[in-house]
Image 1 (cartoon, rainbow over the protein chains, first blue to last red):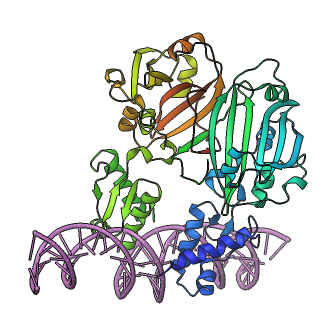
Image 2: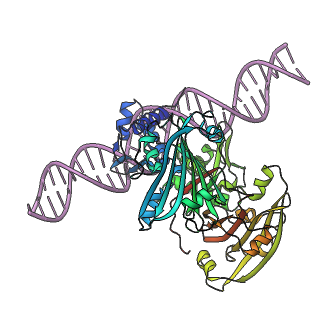
Image 3: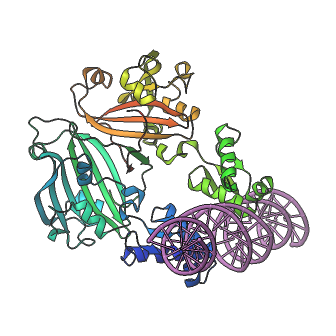
Length: 242
Length: 242
DNA sequence: ACAATTTGGTTGTATATACAAGTTGGTGGT
DNA sequence: ACCACCAACTTGTATATACAACCAAATTGT
């Protein structure tokens, strides 16, 4: 068998979800319906549904049906709290200041991370995230224009880049590194640090099926931010670039 | 059906692995053998093997058999590179200096994290991990003596605490937070920092089935260490304590 | 009008069977 | 000694079937 039947059904369902034909929390065909549509036994259709459930793509309830899960938990690697949600979950006021949103020639190091060539056009955004008007995080982000051509026309006061990108390029995964750094003057200024203090810098590279989407440097003062909860450190996947 | 048959088989297999009857990389019964032993169909036995494989407990090879996976990847939350392996993977020399290994009365904050009471006895170890004789990480660890009574008699020059604990209390999960901190004089001294610089502090709390096992503070200079690869940030599980 | 029951659809568990595909080790021929 | 082949065993895929557990909505009885 060239490719297994249950895998074909999974591919079909994933594509339906990806193009938006089956939105979040909508019902997907039942085991019997899929079995008939694909001319397979119920057990085979069941396997497709089962595996998508294990991957967090669907959720199922006995006696009711199978449904599309919320996209944010699509890939478990993307279960990252959006900083806006995080702040609001603390009952504080979130706001953001857009400092820059342009196209610029791609620096070498960014090019290799995004699979572009040096001086190819790349989108760049610089945003300060604030919690109760106090700077919490400086976000510098490079975005692959081949994958997200409309990036520079977005309004990032109503939506963070992470939210927008999750919408545009779903079903992605992410790669992270965490460093403790000494902020430069520029960073100090935008984080309103009176004197320099240790900062946490999270470097996040996200991927869609078609390759790297964006590279973000998220810098936060150690005194105002910590990475919490469950962190799962897995072996580095060998990806092209970097 | 009170409890599903496939779940009973899983429980049995897990217990065999936990007590060491089936060591790492040893063969476990085949689908047909399990089916006969438990008087179930092959498909039911298969399901038990399948789910344990998905959980990373077993690995299987078509035509060969099913085997116990390396314990360190038991819970995906424990796929943390041991610092010794990490250093050796870079082709460098790993060594460690044990500074302290004692029993002491439990500080309040540690007690709540480990489910003990203030001033209950708790084991404490302090270790410097070195890469090519350069301090890479200062490890301060509190260990629950109820779960690991022999902790203070171990030889941590040949084995890191993390390795030892993984052996003693397998099938655990871990909770992490990452902070950027400004090291105190004590930390500076043991990390041989001429002048203070931002440090990454990873706080790691590990759990076995019976509760919290240990709480470790792993502090590394930002200039010598970064947390890399794939990090998976999941929502904080509500655990007792802390 | 209200409550109890039935009905139909859904997922969950389990079985028996068949064949495909991969690995290992032995068997026999050269 | 070496190679080709085969047999036995393993996991992987797929089917047809049966019944259990559960839920929601329709039906029925009072």
